[in-house]
Image (cartoon, rainbow, N blue to C red; front, side, top):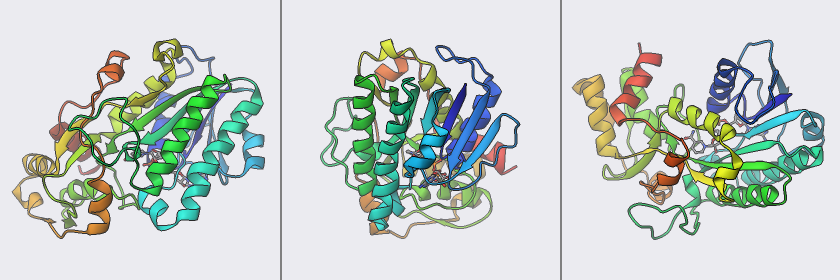
Length: 319
Ligand SMILES: NC(=O)c1ccc[n+]([C@@H]2O[C@H](COP(=O)([O-])OP(=O)(O)OC[C@H]3O[C@@H](n4cnc5c(N)ncnc54)[C@H](O)[C@@H]3O)[C@@H](O)[C@H]2O)c1
C-alpha cells in the first residue's frame, strides 16, 4: 500500500514525508504502507528507497489516473499555489487549487477504495466581520481568490466523504512560522521573514501594523497534527470533517518581542516597518484566534508559546 503526498517537494510536504518515514508503516486505522509517492511540479528532495517522485501537474487527470491506484491507503493533498500568487494569477489559482483538487478527488473516487484524504486548507477561508475568537461554525467569507478556492475544496472534500468516495479530513492550517529558506509568494511570508532574516543577521520589513493578531503554528506542531489527522478515527469526527488546527494567537508586536528575547536587541533592530497595503489588506482580513476545543479534545496539539517557536527555528537552522 502507498501514501500519496501532493506538494511533496514543498516546505510542508517534504517535512511530512520525512515524518511519515520516521513514524514507520503502522498508523492507526490505516493498512501498513511500504511506499510514499510525491506528486509535485518538482522532484521530492527526500532521498529514501521508499519514496518515489512523480513530477507533473496536479490538474492533469491522466497523470492522476496513473498515480492514484487502488493500492492507495491515504492521500495528503498539499499541492497548491499560495495566496499571493493565486491573487496575482487568477487562472493559475483556479486551475491548480480548484480544478486540481477536484481532479484528485475524482481520481480517489475512481479507485473505489475510499482512501483517507487529508486536505490542507487555510484560515484564509474566513473574512469579513468576525468575533475576536472564531467559533468552529462561523460562515466562510474569503477575501482572496486563494481563500475562495480553499473554501470550495473544503466543501468538495466534505461531499466526497459524505458520498463515501473518500474518508476525508480538512485541516485548516494556521500560518506556519518560521519557514526556512527564501521568502515565498504567500501574503503571510513576512511573518517568517521578520524572524528568519534578523536571526541570520539580515534586515526584514514588517508590512502590517504591529497590533495585527496572527494565528500561528511551528512546522513541527503542524506536521504532528497532519500525522494525527490521518490517524484519527473518522467516527469521532461525527460528520464534521473540517477542523481548525490548533495554533497560538499572537500579535506582531508579541512576535517581535520573542525575536528580541531569543535573538537579542540587535536582531530586533533589523526589522523595519514600512506599511504595504497589498499585504496588509489580505493578512488583516484573517482571524487571529480560534475556539479549538473540539480539535484539542480529538488529540490535536499546539506550540507552548512563540518564544519556543523562534527557538525551534534558531536551533534547527540558525545555529
Ligand atoms: N505554510 C503555511 O503557512 C500554510 C498555511 C495554510 C495552508 N497551507 C497549505 O499547505 C499546503 C502546503 O503549503 P507549503 O507551505 O508547503 O507550500 P509550498 O509552496 O512550499 O508547497 C506547495 C507545493 O505545491 C507544488 N505545486 C504547485 N502547483 C502545482 C501543480 N500544478 N501540480 C503539482 N504540484 C504543484 C509546488 O511545486 C510546491 O512544491 C498548501 O496547500 C498551502 O495552501 C500552508
